[in-house]
Structures are given as C-alpha cells and as structure tokens.
Amino acid sequence: MDTGVLEIVVNKKTDTLLKIMRVLTIVLAVCFVIGGFLIGAMIVGLILGVACGIAAYFVWLNNVVDYEYVYVEKELRIAKILQKEKRKELVSYPLDKIEILVPSKSWRLDPYKGRQMETADYSSGYEDRMEYQYTLITDNKKILLELEGEDADRLLTTIRTFAPRSVYRD
Image (cartoon, rainbow, N blue to C red; front, top):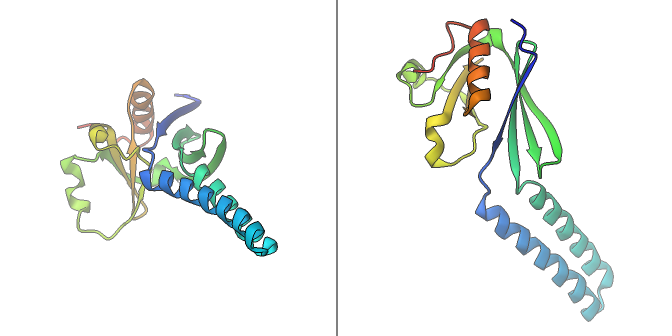
C-alpha cells in the first residue's frame, strides 16, 4: 500500500503571556531609544532598544505556532511552523519503534502510567479538544498529538498497516 505523503496541521493555542511580553518588549524598545536620546546616552539607549526590538521579534515569531504531522516513508515527522512561514523540523519517529498509539483517555495507557518518560506536547493545547488527542509512546518518550478529520483517519489507518498491534482507536 503506497500512500505517499499524509500531512496534518494543528493550530496551537495562542499564549496570553506571549502577547503581553510582545507588547512589553516593544514599549521597552521605544522607551530605551527615546530615553537614550533625552538623557544623552544615545549609544546605551540604542543598544538596549535594539536588544528589546530583537526580543520582540522572537516573541512575535513564537506567538503563532502550528504543528505539522507528516507521514513519509514509514516515518512520522513532526515540524513546528512559526507565524505560518518559518518551518522547523522537530523530530522523526520510525513506525517500527512505536510501542503504542491510542487516544489519550484510553485504558490501554494504564501500564505506562508509572514509567518515567520524557513528554512532548505537539497538540493544540485547547481543553475542549481532548477527544482528538492521541498519545504516542516510543523509545521511553510520551508524545501528545491531536488527530482530527479525514486526514487523521487516513494517517491512523496507514500507521496501523505498518504497526497493527500498536495502534488503537478505542
């Protein structure tokens, strides 16, 4: 069965703290530049203003984040998309290493509850979307994904063809 490439994009919840930090860093940048000119310390004000401007850019960049799940060549790849334009590859999981992929509220995760595992959350973060949240356990890592829609069904079906004893929909 050749499925080619399957892709799902999940929009992450915007963090209010990042919005506040963005406004604060912009205000600080302007204040440092203007204050530097007013008190005669132009170089110091300009340096601090530019530093705050750079910080504002990085806060702005991380303000809108999407996660992209891509199935390619028996691998599940997860990427982070910043501001709908900058894409950063995060991790890649071969399907033969998957221990289990189930809904996050499944009873099948009970044997894994006592284990110390590294956790990575690549879901949207919305509490009302828990029904679409899946947990993937591989190599002593717990990964939270959010799978919804027709593409999600195709992705789960495809992964199940390569790892039939590891994927459950409950």
